[in-house]
Length: 499
Ligand code: NAD
Image (cartoon, rainbow, N blue to C red):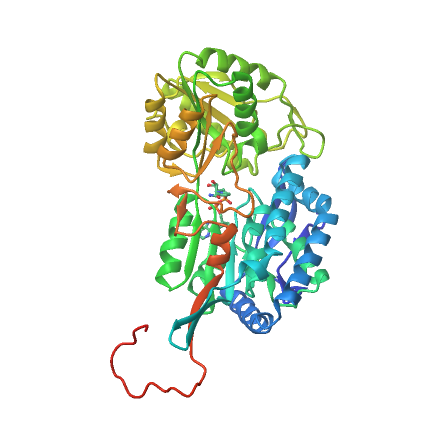
């Protein structure tokens, strides 16, 4: 048997030297082969990591804003220079095609660039003379040790929604990445070290539920930023808040694209294919429900099917449009939804089971799949499938389409395709969803706005990055100050009033 690479924790600026009692297999989804084994942390190791982070944070919080920004700029330069390397690691463990992997690193870089502006973002308010001889001002301070628990589908971008801002604000972080594609974040830990971040401020601890539960209950973990499926997000929110932590828990999604009859149907068809099948549908902002207002459904489906025949499924490092799914188990689960759709009576227009691929036979393949005549009670409509399956639901009016979207349990992203500005404006006002695209299928907000959904797509009240991210990773103080002057007020037991 050949040696399998070992992926271990990165704590206090160095890889963990001791062994691990438990570990998990890491696959290359395009070959179906195990390429590495990742260590799983014990509660004792989490405790050690938190202690290291706590000590480092006390020093880091005292570093001047100028010093912190220098480190962030250096990190930005290293990440930008070596982003192809990061993308290759993502493709090797996640399976998404290289250009897509590079795209996620670039979106993460935007948050780093946003966090470089932390001196401006942390500026407080100052009211001179709020009362006689009294000034009032506000400051924001770091929380302490912040935990970030991330999903498999964006091993670089999702952690980067959080840690650049957390670190810039003077916190230390512990990242528990997905055990399915754990290498990317270790390379990023090396970049931080090279950028001059003090040891212990950025720590990676790998693991499963044991590690997550230990973070949730550790008294010195101040906050949890979680991204993953809705049942786990709910669990994280309930348990984290019960233990007194600040929690933002982003969950699953079912994103609808509403196409009005006046839309540019070629634009809509391109968008549906790109947003439905990019990254094999393993995006929290993927379009999986295409709601078409009649009479244009037949024409739109024809345009989409034509485009689908040209899509190349295969190894993400070899010029394909769409890579494999992340694991065999996940591929089989998505395929079982296709079976369920057929059994429920939906019309299978393009069948992605048994696809022709450019890659090893053992890869976790599933081709792009299109259903028509889908109805709201079918599981392919109700559930998040998280694979390359696009369902068309035909409606007669805008109101019927809107009602469908608003009744769904998820509210992450949505898009409307129309040439009618009035209809688009009405949609942005009426739809119960956190992120909206107008003739834009994947409306991921830019870094200086905040990312987050409504309903079962987010637990907690704070979205990721932008001003909400700065707010999440800091806490406020208000100072009421009087510098001695000759006029003392004397004794007064009444409640202070401004005057
Ligand atoms: P997941 O919920 O299985 O795992 C997410 C994280 O939780 C991982 O780090 C995992 O190790 C950990 N985890 C898994 N089971 C756990 C348990 N029982 N107890 C404690 N921790 C546990 O999600 P995934 O499959 O890695 O990612 C896909 C999901 O993430 C999809 O539902 C997708 O919509 C969602 N997602 C949402 C967003 C968003 O912004 N809303 C972004 C990306 C992904």
